[in-house]
Length: 381
Image 1 (cartoon, helix red, strand yellow):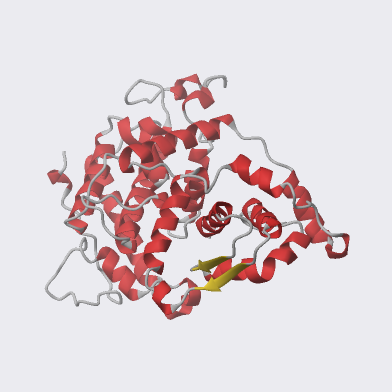
Image 2: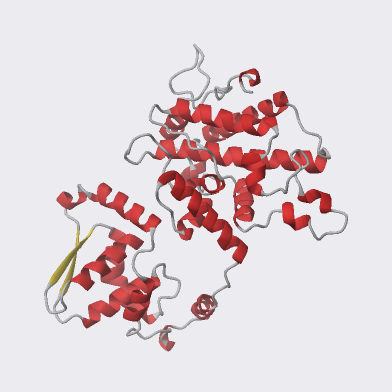
């Protein structure tokens, strides 16, 4: 929707004010907003409206035009290119902001700000005050967000804007505890490394007990020399490459792990959108990162830095993957209504990496004991 509004605004900017303009809008939500809701939103000061600045600038431009501006819905012929247009719009809104922010602000100045007294309610007043209070950016969060963007750009060639990364972390695909971990990680709020430097009697926690160097999340997930950590990522790599001949393995990094829901799964060729492949890649990356973090915390806190064995780590990681597969199977039940996962999605996600047996049917979603095909721990190392 953001890219569509920006495109409409860009078209109006390019067209002289005294020439009749007709815009065909593929996005039904944006079409309804422009034709039915724009004036009402203006009366409410665009309170609580996503892309409020864009819509305010659009309204200003429409009011300044001397010739008619017509908006039409897409015809069946236009809708044939809807998927391609939506894909390009999605990519555009992910990579950069829609248009120059200062230009939008200048355009929207001609629209009176605030809420009409006749439209004011306590809820609208409260929300307006909240929107006027802009929280100060946290330097640590901005640094980590910049690192995530840099890693994703190095891996894919494009850097998503922070809004897309935050939206990715809110993806329902991510379990609640893993989401909390990712939020804490992006904000730099995990109690590791420098956090312990100025706390009496806790200075020894600054360094990794196994490697002897200062600990941070990047070290814990990707650089620590504990043998089981590498084994976890080796299993993820093997499963991912096994899932599709076109699958490409990228060396895991902080950005591609915490921001895995904000870019398409890596592939050897430029492919069309493949939600199932994206889903599997995100599950593997999220579960691996969270598993390594949990295991590290258990070793440091509960086991007093006594490391676990490779067989134990292998068994627990395999169990984590099997439990995630079982969860997907259960979420296909009709009782979950709007939250249920289609059986075809679960089948397509896991079909290529499950352990095949002679008595396993093609539709195995309702079966028990279906396992992810992970090789024995002796094959890793």
